[in-house]
Every structure is written in structure tokens, then in C-alpha cells.
Length: 171
Image (tube, rainbow, N blue to C red; front, side):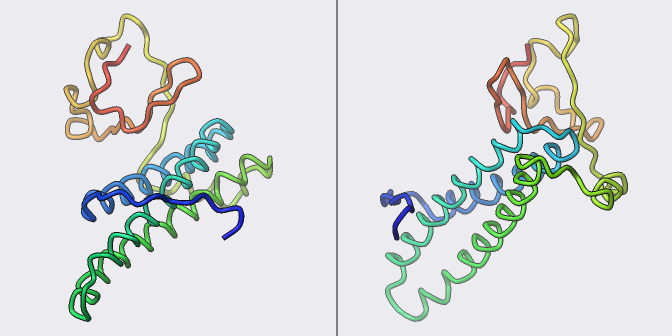
């Protein structure tokens, strides 16, 4: 496997790996959508990096499944985990393809732009004013998703991106 990074085995519960794979893939879809919508190369690059993380996690899960399967029944029981992880990996690959269109300067096709306008879920970019009532609170404390249907998927502080910032104090 020339050119591929070797994944070292770590004894992590399969459930934890699967949750991380699923949540990272879901985040990647949102970020890829935002990178295309705003033609943001920085966001697109983050999607590519997250794709590498999903690949490593999937390799970890494959090793854990291989070690855990002692017989035919174990293998059949583990198959569902692998199918979920594999499908999430495919979603992350699709998100990466979207990110590469941004990184290669191909722009967003008109039909995709029109499709973005039709989706229920909206993505926006907002700058937080220092006098905002949100300053000093975490997204989890604000519970905006339950109150007004807004989910903060990323924060940017200078050049740094923070993903899934539920416990990060807004400043």
C-alpha cells in the first residue's frame, strides 16, 4: 500500500468509532455545502482534512471488527457496523468531491446553486458583535437549535476553525 499512511491499532470501542465516523461525515456535508455556497477554500480544505480523519477511523474500525469476529455469528453481527461506517465514508468522499470543486476553482454549477436554494436546511455565515447577548455563552447553553432551529457547526477565530463547538465560549 504505497503512499497510504499506516494506521496503528488502538483499542477503542467500536461504538465510539462509529459515532465519530457518523458525526464527522455529517459535519463534512455541512462544511462542503458551505464551502461551495460561499466559495470558501479554507472551509473546503478543512473538508479534505476531515476526510482523511474519516478514512483513518474506518481503518481503525475495520481492525477492531476483524479482531472481534471469532466466528460466523460474530462476523454477521459486526456486518451492520461496517455497513454504516462504509456508507458514512462514501458520504464523506462525496463531501470531499464538492470541496475539490471549490479548491480547483471550478465554481458551483448553476444547477447546484439552484438546488442549494431549495433545501430546507440553510447555512449562513455570521460575525459576532462584541456587544452581542451571545458573547460569553456556549452554543450548548444557548440551545439555539431547539429554540429557533439554528445549529452552530463551526466557529472561526482568526485563522483557526473550531468544529462542533458546543462547549466553546463565544467571544
